[in-house]
Image (cartoon, rainbow, N blue to C red):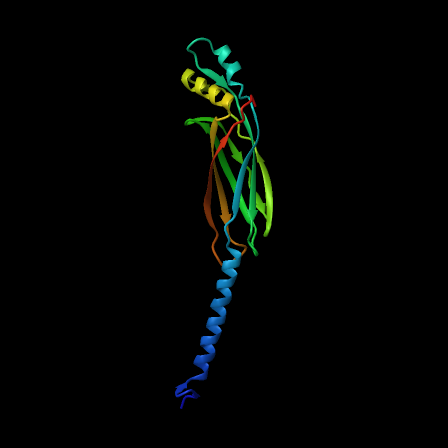
Length: 190
């Protein structure tokens, strides 16, 4: 005969009650750990400096109707904030492209880095272009927008991560984080 206990007007197996309480405690704890541990990492991208963007001077050497050749470099600051309680956020590598009106002006690599739990890291990335050709029409529009302070460059960064969450019981996974941002260049020659 199975052991039973009387709960109100029902007979219930005490082992079944204990097993149910243990399962609720276990899954409740796992849920809390996952909610606190897997939080969204925040990214901020700022333009610190620009070099090699003297489009007007390059236009003077291009001659009538010719394309302008520039070799710009963009000093970008990437801030990564990891609000996670239990795990660092590590990125294996990345790529960055800076473009204007669909034309790639500069490109480069983002080195791998880790942000410890509940902390922030800053990383300087310097994409640069070599011998980038701008058509006369694009050059004229770009010079005009630079002088007005309305020239916008589009920055696209793809960061590749390796996530194993520091738990050997789970197989590691890989993924990619995409950051896209439009930044306005100042109204002076940078």
